[in-house]
Amino acid sequence: MQRTYIKDLKSHVDNEVLIKAWISVRRDQGKMFFFDFRDATGTVQGVVLPGSNAGEISNSLRTEWVVSVKGKVNKRPERNIKEGVLNGDIELEILEIEVLNKAETPVFDIGADTREINEETRLENRYLDLRSDRLQKNLRMRHKVSNFVRSKLDEQNFVEVETPIFTKSTPEGARDYVVPSRIYPGKFYALPQSPQQYKQLLMSGGIERYYQFARCMRDEDLRGDRQPEFTQLDMEMSFATEEEIMSVTENLLIEVVTKLYPEKKIQQIPFPRIPYKEAMEKYGNDRPDIRENKEDENLLAFCWVVDFPFFEKTSTSDNPQAEGEWTFTHNPFSLSKEEFVENLKERKNIGDIIAAQYDIVLNGYEIGGGSVRAHDPEILKNILGILGHSEEKIQSNFGHMLKALGSGTPPHGGIAWGFDRLMMILQNEPNIREVIAFPKTREGRDPMMDSPSEISGAQMDELSIKILKKDK
Ligand code: ASP
Image (cartoon, rainbow, N blue to C red; front, side):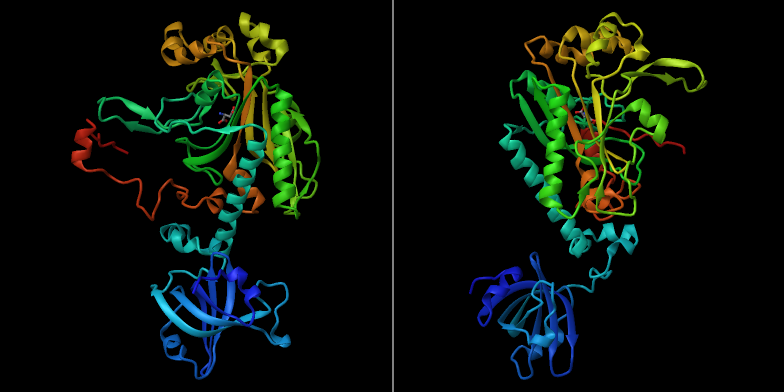
């Protein structure tokens, strides 16, 4: 007999079916047993009637055991119908039960809200946590959103291209995670903080419209909505203006919400645009929460923040008042707004230069950002010069970018969405760990796999690595 998914049982009334499922609940009522069975598609109530062959085995069954059940789908009597619940109007009359696997008693109740449970315990037993209704929904909606985005971008001639994980440090402003090379002792790969250089090199490579659900790794101090690795929806477009890139993003976000979250309301379309200066003056930050009603969890207030300064002065550590060197506010590969290109070329009035940079903000969270890029190698060289790189450093660190830009690279620009953050907000979750299958703890550990962990002496020798004991 073929397996029937629990969501499809209602079309098998009066027929015999076979389901494969977990036992969510078992109730022993003396003469009868009631079960709630759960598979990836839903839940159904089963009943073992007095005198049934399944009576004996039902005694030994426990929650979270995995079973194969033969039964007959019956309509429930009118008085037992549960309105608005999947399979609320049917019941499975159990004829036979086979145990496919037993289960230890779960360390926490996965039928309850697992957000209440100690984080360490949850993450150590993440496979159990993932069985909970909420995490099931989060992961399935995450899949639906990424699937939808893929199909929409495909319709618009975007091509998904994978870029390397073993790469060289990209200057995104965070610390790199590094991987030692065995073949080249003393040398390291860096894990990408984003595919920034590769996506631009794909524009040099004639791809024209690129996207990727890309893993990014940044060794930063962890916060509620940060993880050492996270996912970006990364995009780049050749021949596109700032307006076009913003409109692709805006339309896609609107479509995601209207198609997959019809219960949610977007506060304002087109998304309002707030200059950086105004955001700082009015809201005190560059990711303003402009919701008219913060009580309504279905209100989505998107806005763009634009007109960012390209450069800012770093403060020197021993004297924060003293003016330091110039650093970039977002991305060293950006272009300025057109009217400031001369300033870049002549390296003058640097503090006044406004970048062709746009951030997308949702309910007070920055959920994405991007820019039009400098496609003229001379301009990029000037930017890197302003940032204090010597001619020699520019050649050794960015020579490949300058060469590629000089090889016939079209004007281009792009954006990256913080996909975890977007999903967190859409799913009404308080932090991104709830929408990631296997996140790290707040302290950057994985208690289930026990990582990070030590490696053997032999592995270290092979990598020519020695650990210096640090006095703390
Ligand atoms: N690479 C940038 C980031 O990760 C996004 C972009 O400019 O496209 O923030």
